[in-house]
Length: 249
Image (tube, rainbow, N blue to C red):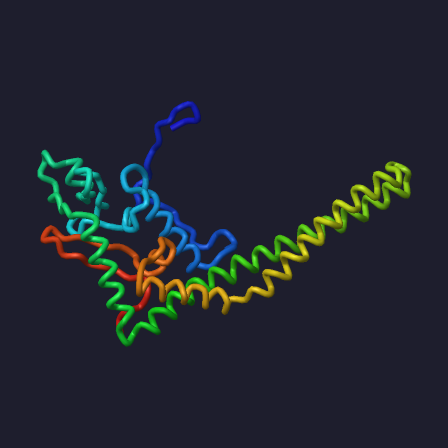
């Protein structure tokens, strides 16, 4: 309403003016969507069970609100529909209560079955592609930044030399700063060489090993986010898994 007030006027969605791609992109849509998906997953990971693999990604199938996880007893954690918990006196939705350890076990078992089927290689390649693209973009961006930093340091050396010739600094001061800048540039050059040496294929191979480990044991949060979009629980306790990769063959 004004800069003195905290009250805001909310414009109806039909009156919004949306200009797509109005700002230059610094990352791809795929990388942005994956990062945003991970952010949404982690946005409700405070309090009980912050380290739960599925927290922030499980929804009520009927009302589409997220399930919150609470420690009911000293042994078990249960998930319940947030909308139900907030408006139970109005009989909004239903509890959808489910024990977390059972839910996680069923979800991981279903994913493992999927990855053991004949379409496993195609699914793995979809995941590899996400990691490869993300890794390549981050590496390229880092190299550009490092090269600019190195060029700035070269300009500082030129200015430093001019200051020495003009008598603004003495020989001792010049050599001390010169050595410091040259050391920084050497470190930058070493990092650039290392980034160029570590190619995308090496990163893909690393992720492949991680995926193989998951098939036989466990999965980390980042890898899970690349595979699964969300999970819904029906009032009859049916579990639906929505994948980020193409599982329709």
